[in-house]
Length: 237
Ligand SMILES: [Zn+2]
Image (cartoon, rainbow, N blue to C red; front, top):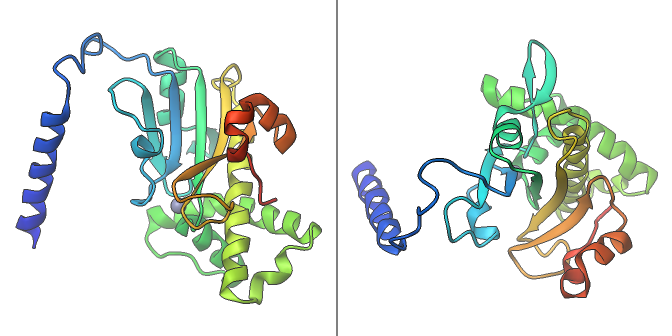
């Protein structure tokens, strides 16, 4: 089985090589100036290159972790994660996209930790989930205020709904965390949720814009993107 997978990986790379235009790396070999860095959840169903139809090198600086977090801990302090700060500081990148997704297992694990006190046992996974816990707690409070968290012990459909709302809440929080750092202060910061559960009412693969530089009001965001993309502005909160 392992050997088959190894063969598949090499086969897939051969496909990649064949698909590259001979000039694909022209102007790219000596450095990069990607216009956007994207932080997405490390989930095999959510392809960062795929969702933005990235067909050339040099467009998208990708960072990923479970729960699409923008921060890291250095000496106990929360700082902008290196994989986000690096392009903003060194490659002329001036936009950051934070991308959560429906059905997120990391948000689900944090939700489960809040409810049961139980965390995944692997220390690295636990540390990542712990970072999400205060956000999920605050999100549940916010949903309560809106009358939404009564569903927490309800049907699985309602539980999925709560989780997806917390996913969006986490995107807003990550946008706020990024904007609160010196490194990202001058950047445009966008928040999206990638949907493959129909949670926002559209097709699989749609990325819904939920936040631009802290602005969450759908009407304001629709004005920003114009009528062509107005249906990709939505909120579950
Ligand atoms: Zn996820």
